[in-house]
Amino acid sequence: MKWYKGNIHTHTTNSDGDSSPDHVASWYKDNQYDFLVLSDHNHLTILEESKTDLDKWPLLVPGEEITIREINGKPAALHINGIGIKELITPGVYESNIDGINDVVDKVNMQGGLASINHPNYQWWVSSDDIKYSKDAWAFEVFNGHMHSNNEGSLHSMSTEEIWDEILSSGKLIYGVASDDAHHFTEEFSSSRSNPGRGWIYVKSNSLRVEEIIESMKKGEFYSSTGVELQELEISKSKIYLKIKDRPPKEKQKYTIRVIHDSGVVFFEKEGDELEFDTNGMKKYCRVVIRSSEGVNAWIQPFFL
Ligand SMILES: [Zn+2]
Ligand SMILES: [Zn+2]
Image 1 (cartoon, protein in one colour):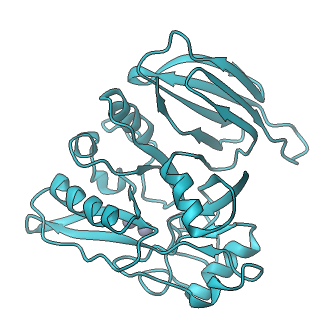
Image 2 (spheres, protein in one colour):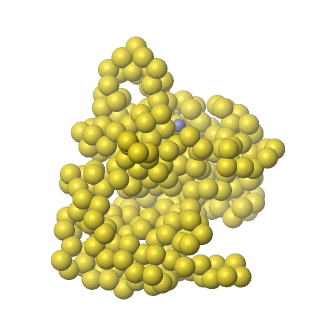
Image 3 (cartoon, helix red, strand yellow):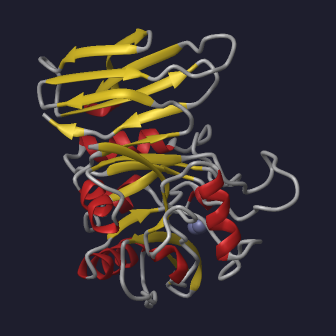
């Protein structure tokens, strides 16, 4: 088994991105990504060439950002990625967020794909209740690199991690993904623009093939990152072992590792680059988050105890 790095949310000129599918795919190949989902709004972008030449292209996993712009006759911002789908999915007419999620999740599942609810805090559009009380999506975005995604929440609104804990505490399993949602591959790279290289996942798989990558993602055999990489990760219901990979900067990073359970409560916390942990005594679910002193994270996928 190997770890493969991939971004599962990005845009091209087939929707509102500033660069062609070729240019976007090349950017990810040049930056050492193994696979990529070109997730244009209501458009299935496939790069035929990439199917045969993995020395030149990242593995392209077909995908689409199913984009619902109107609900109940009013403007809406409900966006759901269909990853590993085979045919374009056109959004229907919906009366509520839950209605929209139910329909899209069904359509994605019917094609053998994975449905991910994108940027819940973009325009504060999707609540934890919307996710709790709708059909099981495979994942939601705990991190989205777009400048208007509000991952951290606000004084009055939950952060994406708080949303995650609320859903998990209700007994519903959902994975948390990190993605770029990149639109801008040319001109200046800055925090006020929607650039690539901000959030990705590492998937554990036998080989770099679409079916196997999708299968591992489906089973939760991946973790999400904005810059923390693991050298080892072993998880069972009773034990977790992880070791963080050293990074090159001159001054060594400091890492805080938190083990979280029911209601988002921190069950255990330590500083360092290694965790050997027994889940005995934990309630309901377990997830681990690692934060570096540099401000980047890794999120290990939750599991129920
Ligand atoms: Zn979106
Ligand atoms: Zn997007």
